[in-house]
Every structure is written in C-alpha cells, then in structure tokens.
Image 1 (tube, rainbow, N blue to C red):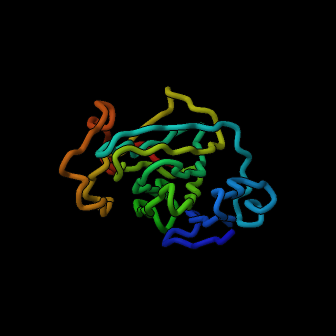
Image 2 (cartoon, helix red, strand yellow; image 1 turned 90 degrees about the horizontal axis):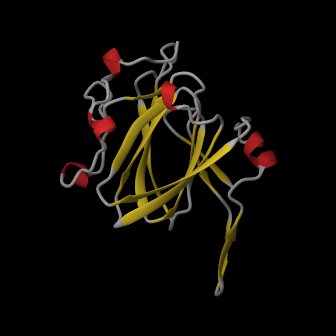
Amino acid sequence: MKIIQTAIPEVILIEPNVFEDPRGFFMETFQEKKYREAGITYQFIQDNHSRSIQGTLRGLHYQIKQPQGKLVRTIVGKVFDVAVDLRRASPTFGKWVGRILSAENKRQLWIPPGFAHGFYTMSGWAEILYKATDFYSPEYERSILWNDPAIGIDWPEETNEKLILSTKDMQSSILAFAEVFE
C-alpha cells in the first residue's frame, strides 16, 4: 500500500494495493501489521456503514469524550471527505484536509481522534464504510458548522447548489464557540 502524507501529518491518505483482472479486483482493506507500520496504532472496535444521496453533507462530527479515530473509505460512488483538527495545542488547530474518496480510486483516509469528520456526496449516491477506534456515544457527540469561515473548507463547487443537511448539522456550533480538545 502507498502512504500519502497530507498537510496535517497525522491525517494519512492510503492507497491500497489493488489486484485487477478480467474477473474484477481484490484488495486488502485492513491488515493490522501494515497499518501499524504506517503509524496507525489504534485498535478498531466498531465498523460503520453510511449511505447518502447526492448533495448530502454530513458533519463536521466528533465526540468530545471517547473521541473516535476513523479509517474511511467509499465503496459506492464518490465523496469529498474532510478532517478538521480540533486539538487546541496542535500547530494545525482549526486547519482542515479534504480528499476525494471513491469506489473507483479505492483510497482510504485515516482521521485520528481529536479531529472532526465530515463528507459531501458528489455522486448520485454513495456508501462509505469506516472503522472507528471507540464506540459511538451520542451524549458526547458534537458538531462544527460545515461552512464556518474560521475554518474555510474549500468544498466542491456544487456543494451550495442542492445541499441536504440534517437539522442537527444546520444547528452546529462555529469553531469559536465549540468544545474542543485541550
């Protein structure tokens, strides 16, 4: 597999080895030893599967207690996936990294604990799978407003056209008033 560094060193883009032939393809989506060698040393304890229609924006979500690291991949369609550093003591606090993850490119994005996560569905619909390092705890879930100007995420151009948000995501906090990691 190929490890691709991002502007935030802890966020890693992973390009798995894919073996294709006329029948289809095979790839390892996770192998503990290889991921540990790449610097992902967390234990995964929960897998999640999400399906969204085109124009859906989910996020920017995080858990203030029991923070989750996430290994994200798209198995159907295409999304623009984003991680935002919410660790106040970090030199990249408030900065973001975004990458296109698709069924076609088979890339994965490692988002460590201490980051908010969100994605925008660019294709007719998309399904993402992600491994998490801690259990989902709704009482600790928080979210940052997807278009907070203090963060300045450069979402794909079509994001504002037919944006579909949950009520919770529409009522998210801006970074200046959000609970973050010390």
